[in-house]
Amino acid sequence: MQTLIAIGAGIAVLSGIGAGIGIGIATAKATEAVARQPEAESKIMKLLAFGCALSEATAIYGFVIGLLIIIFLK
Picture (tube, rainbow, N blue to C red):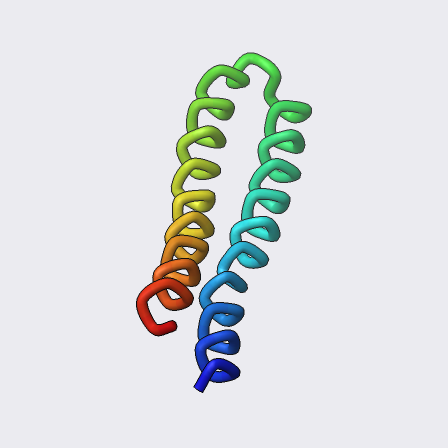
């Protein structure tokens, strides 16, 4: 039973990998966009911050779910 709980928590925390990849790609594309159109930097950075916040929220949700699995199913 403990092994299944650990596996479930590990799978829940894997959402952080997707968030990291997503933030990396978004940052690369934003940097590219600013290089092409420097006058739009403020708009691009606002959208980048919003997108990164949403992406990071999914990673935090996965982490919290992993913790809840460990705490309540112990």
